[in-house]
Length: 102
Image 1 (cartoon, rainbow, N blue to C red):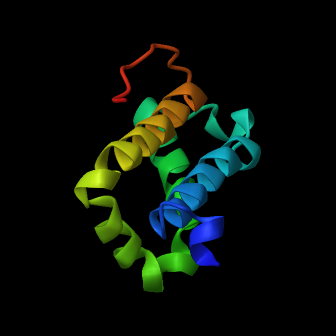
Image 2 (tube, rainbow, N blue to C red):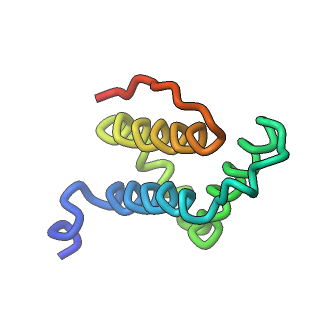
């Protein structure tokens, strides 16, 4: 049954969580919370918020990180982390584009 829901296995669960956390940032971080802060403080604030979403999953997150290091999963995890960082930079006002690995 688990394979039917997640054909690529447990790495898909980790990826879904990371995507959900990235989406949640856009909801939770308000522009006015970033005003009157230096760029490094803005980035720190947003990353701290993003990392706080992992707290309930910490007992199992090490296993998810290990799955992400397996060769078939590296590009997927890299792209998800790249997307998250892109979201963080967008939130603090940077609109440049980067390169994603396919």
